[in-house]
Image 1: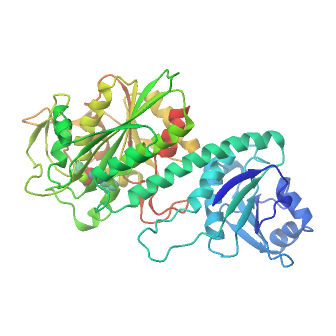
Image 2: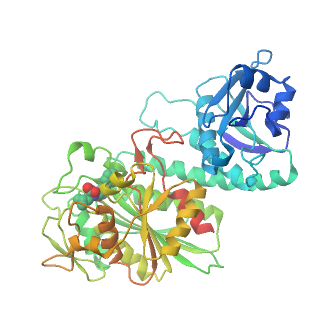
Amino acid sequence: MKVKIEKKSILDVNADVIVVNLFEGVNTPGGVTGIVDKAFNGIISDFVIQKEKFNGKYGEIYQLPLIESGKKIFVTGLGKQSDFTYTKIRDLTAKVVRSCSLSKNIKKVVSILHGAGIAGLCPFSCAKMIAQGAISGTYVFDKYKTEKQENPIEEFIIAEINDEKFEKAKKGLEEGLIIAESVNNARDLINESSQYLYPETLADYAVKNSGVKTTVYNKEQIQEMGMRAFLAVGQGSVHEPKLIHMEYKSENAKKKIAIVGKGITFDAGGLDLKPPSSMLTMRDDMSGAAAVICTMQAISKLKPDIEVHAIVAACENMPSGSAYKPGDVITAKTGRTIEIDNTDAEGRVTLADALAYAEELGVDEIIDIATLTGACVVALGTVASGIMGNNDNKIKEFIEIAQKAGERYWQMPMYEEYGDSLKSDIADTKNTGGRYGGTSAAGIFLSKFVSKADWLHLDIAGTAFLDKPNSEGIKNATGIGIRSLIEYIIQ
Ligand code: BES
Ligand code: MG
Ligand code: ZN
């Protein structure tokens, strides 16, 4: 499906579906919806609103067939104007595209630039959200289905006749499409079975598709770098661990930042084996890695004035005769010793070395993203991701940028006492301790491996992989994190 924008009246685009909108409680449609209403003799105000009682409730779509032409008008509900957000523009567009793709006869869809009319939102951001919603709306993972789901829609067109709005929206659309493609690529990577996606194939993907200079280190090289904590986690697997380092450098870079993604291609729990129901979806344990790889794809196209390093310590956490064991003491790259209390708390052990590697690059700022703790799923559910770090202002800034990008983060506390359970009798720290406050304890553990850089930690355990569709209609891999990381980096 091609997504584009045309400087035309919505009535002058020849399409099978015309998408207009309505805020809740509006009886006389204004703006472009009003123009369409008048052109069709008041069919929206008299029939859809008065007779059918469609009142613009958020997310509802009234599908109005036009008898003469066989075309349809979709009147979409935007909800209350005071509650309107950019995220709603994206989610509604995804919903429209999904419902259009169910009908074989819909090849061309034309849409109003939601949000840029009466709501007065920035046309650039509105178009950016529409582009992302439209592309998300086409997402399916049907690689392993013999019968593929055809998407009949060939074109999705935004119509905007105003010169200024058109120019802004055109730019927003371009950026939106770049971001959307990265998000869908990450979804493909995460949804892929771990029988095909293991450290080597993940590294190959990064080399071929990250769009930036990518170096892959093998086991011997990782050993030479002293990353013993990372190696310990991977030592029970038949697949060799790989350290992936991607670099993007602008000539005018004033800031140097690293993004680090947890890259456990399958988390069986190790010798502290997970029960079946918890293990089932653990191919998603590289969602952080997918996020940083696919963020780099977008960065390579958006070309911001910054230096970005993306790091993935990729391995598999398996039980076997060679696996690391509870009670083992490992010396991490920084020299800190870790007593393994539970082999299933493996993400933080690999991240300890990945963070240390990032810090050695001399970056000003490090952001790690990880499906790290089940405790985060308990605390925040699938609705928001956790965020922690060593700089409160940066945490606040990230939350705000993410919100506008359509992702939610909620700050979790890092009180010292959360680290009490990590005290070890024989080493500098244990990798886990008590049952309670697990997300914060993991945050405290990670903080010990960053000394100078500003550091943010994103726990996406609850938001990376869903068993029910989210507000965007996405089930299984969501591609969470990419939109926020990109926006935060390009600011
Ligand atoms: N990958 C899991 C965390 C996870 C849980 C991700 C649910 C996605 C959904 C992580 O490696 C893990 O196993 N964490 C343990 C830590 C515990 C042993 C301290 C957990 O949260 O149960
Ligand atoms: Mg685990
Ligand atoms: Zn894990």
